[in-house]
Length: 181
Image (tube, helix red, strand yellow):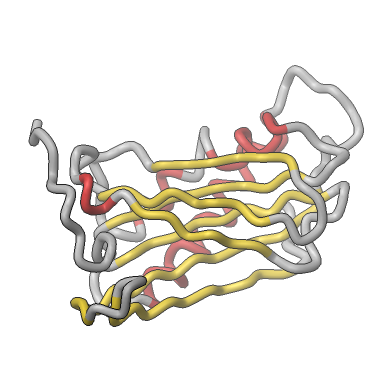
């Protein structure tokens, strides 16, 4: 199994919106795992070599991220940045087929699809990781974003996998919840 070159934790505690208006505290945690892309530099139709990475790394990292929150996780998201010798599909193979199950297990469920983003980028590239309510995909107030990067990754033959959780939606949300299904 893959061993990350490094793991990076980002913890945000938000107590005011971007205009300085005090809000109910929002706790957000993201974890980044940087590892070698075994398919870098070559085209493969079968990406299953990358599927298990999300499952295996996701179990431990999801538990750690949830433990760093200062309350129950209400929303979540995932993302990947693939180094220049890889393909966007390599990131998709890491975060889509098997990462969702351990992310949901860490929060005892989750009805909604986990919002995600993947891109190819160079060292220090950032990515906007989307967050959405774990149970209600129509909760507009929980549509949020964490902009994340690892300053020395991804190297051309690496992938950075991100997972994130939050205890609330955006600070002082005013867009509503949309239709409840």
